[in-house]
Amino acid sequence: MIHHVVDDHHFKDEGLFYRFYLDEEGSAATTAKNHEYKESRETARAALHLHGLLRLTKVLIADRPWHLTMYKQCFVASQFVAWLVQTGELGS
Image (cartoon, rainbow, N blue to C red; front, side, top):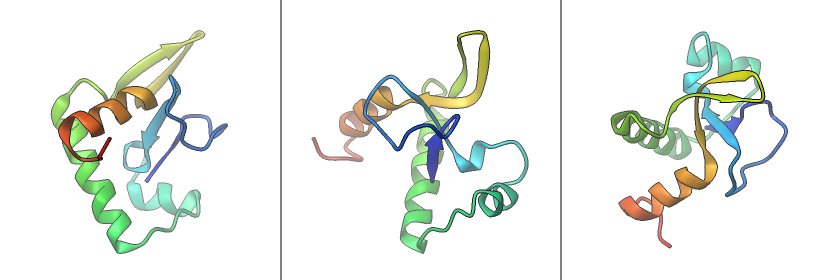
């Protein structure tokens, strides 16, 4: 579903950058295969749902600079969690 932009961390509610596998360069199927990423149908549906909602915001997912590196199409974990709670997608 999502991963840290340089795969250094599991998900943390902090100021770290993460992205959806769907936003990786290349096709989603290739990316998932390359990362040996397997998910249940329910998880896949939830990922597509959240990905679609985030895309609609046009704020959370963006190219973000950090220490002279541009991380493409990612989001800040703490902002994502706050958005999930605020929209009711996740209980507080």
